[in-house]
Length: 422
Ligand code: PMP
Image (spheres, rainbow, N blue to C red):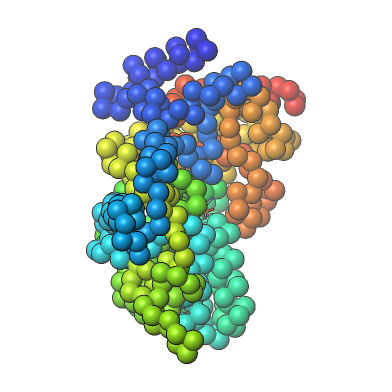
């Protein structure tokens, strides 16, 4: 434990005065955990992030003193919960620069947000012979809903290829756009390669032909400044749990004009204006897309996470993380037998690698012995694995509470794995 305290003190000294990592770490109680007697080194942030005390407290406070169902109650608790829930929508709106609060739809997460678009917008707007463009580096949740829709409608999926560094081949994207293209849906930051895609250019190009664009922001919202008005994306999806909020809550941003024209996604309470056995009229935005009792505590805690990040500043977080990622790549890359998967010029958060002759699951298991949490597997991006001819990778993904010293421990641990298997 003393060794770890020493590490933290060093970090404090090495951190620039405006970014005090050790004080940030104190906000995340789980980071004090010992794993197999070793201080937890949590490098699985692309799978899910840890929660600051402020978020944990918010959930406890809500259930301790604020729990009530929202929107239709006349009693005080219901009014209070409704206000907090709707204020949370406004916090998210401001955070991503949306024009209107009703452009923020609360969902279960990125997966549900994309399925909502595929189901509501897709069924109405995609027909036989139409084409949907996605990229080779999409998460399964930005592949499968479109594949299902294309099968149902007799439409086709077109794939923007990637180069050996894991960057989109932009000219191929331009070549794929044609009069049959009805939609482009791309990931902002790849969860398995770390590539930051030029989504603003992709959107501008598609808009020349009035093609709407969805951005999967599951891995960008927590690392980069996102302004949906500046990007001019038509939809933007993200998950609460990847941005230091709870699981089971996420966001779909959609431009009002699109959301207005889309039919509801699910039917039930709250999404209606009036119901008879003959017919139903639907509620206005955003409620049209929020059938049933939502994850009230989740939305409120997500807003708390956003406030917590705003207090630190996403720009400062991005700068710190970028330096740390460079450090990790420079430290891991040269280790004998390591092959980095994803060497794009513009990367965020993620360092994926394979090791000659050692299966990633064995690496992950051995790192766990040293208290290091990484992810091994295909990361829900099987086409990416196929592209690189590997079954799986080991992925270390960083957050702003990670330190260079933790990366040093990771490298030492990888070297131990190499020694063990050689
Ligand atoms: N897209 C990307 C790029 C992701 O990394 C993830 C989660 N790994 C998802 C979509 C799906 O997110 P969720 O499971 O939270 O719905």
